[in-house]
Image (tube, rainbow, N blue to C red; front, top):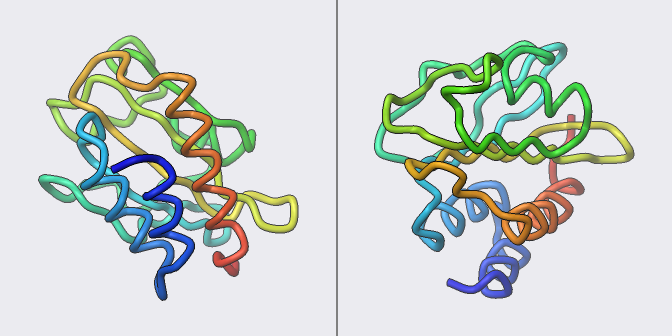
Length: 144
């Protein structure tokens, strides 16, 4: 799947969050696990996700872990080696790298896209740019 095809699928979906997870999980080989967390109070709560197995991290306090750091700062986090980052909350033994992209609505973080990869240093600036475009599409549909 191309980036443009994924963006079109998300834009035209009745449920853009589920469509985003589906397009990202099934369209990009190096994305091993894809989830969207939504901000509820001071926590991130797991929404739609796809991957080989569920994560135990269904609720993460804002500010904790890589996901919580991205939510607190509003900035994309790319971790090339999760084993070298003390903030990483281990979900799966196979995960080697992670990218977390905040979703904003009206200037505040309302959620985020969390993607794990079984490959080290899997996420490039191209992934960052593309996923930030996905987050821009999702911002207006997340009401928190």
